[in-house]
Image: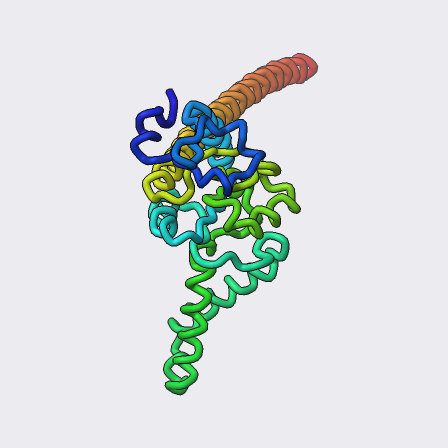
Length: 287
């Protein structure tokens, strides 16, 4: 079943591109026509590309890996933080910190610094600090939270990057390409689709357009996580059944072994008694 349909995309204004004079020639395969000096995106191709991207993102989520969403545009910040936060995926909606992917260990140090400040605030030593020191640390914490608060759980490089506007987030795209991280992106008619692994031709300026496509991606992630949970529960049940079967087999083998020992003991005892009787009779005859 398609993630979206033509009418939903049309109602959200996904088909509206940029002015003809601002277009990127590499987007020609995704442009349906020109109307009043504005390029119109071919929504039939958009539907197909959304399904392809959603299927790939679902598999990533099912494998337990992370997808990093990047959308620093004003109209996309709240949409992305709400939808992506609901599926516990990392996202960047403030400025992109340069070197976030290519210099990931440094970013992790900054995240750990933020967590250490949180620990300090809960500690009794916090009360011994002066008012000025508390203010400085609190400001530092707020600054780190604004930029890195949404990637606290990102302990290693993401498996993929989802970008709302490849032109605005070109630094993030370049870093991902350098590291070989797959890039999913909403690409408007003024952007270059070259180098993007999963191109979704769409209007990346309208909030309704952004919301519709990001929701399709987060729904796919939710499905992937749900399937992963079911599979892990099934594996757990199978392991439990195997463990019980192993215990039963061990118990049966132990019972069989005990039974064999008992039979051997009985045979030994019978032989000993017969020999004792024969010896007694021989001694009496000699006397």
